[in-house]
Image 1 (cartoon, rainbow, N blue to C red):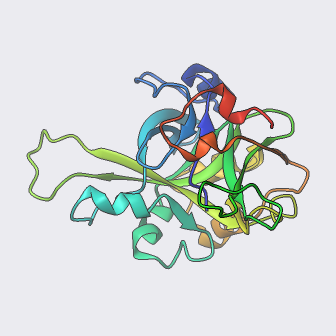
Image 2: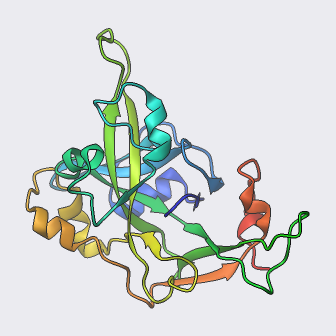
Length: 236
């Protein structure tokens, strides 16, 4: 599961990092990105032609009747990505990279956990990011949707989903899932819409090296999507 993340690099910084062009309107800096928010993602039309574009987080398949389905499509499991109707088509051609400064995950409560007003133990939010501070290149899928029988001038809604896999040893004490983080050596192959070797693509969807990430406890203020600021990622 990946349900919240941080996007604090500017569009220009992200475009330069991934060797992409950008000429649109970027979503604002966000320390508490939640499903249905606008996010940036890198896509390619082939070769070295990469562009950075804005997407709604929560994939809406082209066959969907309405956009509500997107709220349950924020993640795509790597183990079933080539089987699920919502993902198998876009997996073959519409792949992206979703840059993140880091992401949040909640560690299960235990006997010594703080308690809420009702006396129940509270899960501890953790902020997870790269040890070297560089952006995470998270594997994703994207789609374009608009209602059936739309007029030709009706704009398309572009949406995306984060691909998750089993946790590595760093993440395992917190959660059993984590986003797929792609090394730079695989970016071109992953983004290439002409790449149709499904076995090769599936082989990329593995846990990140244990040494790539670090984490620390953060305030439960992040639990409320209305809270947004640098204090959310400050260690406690």
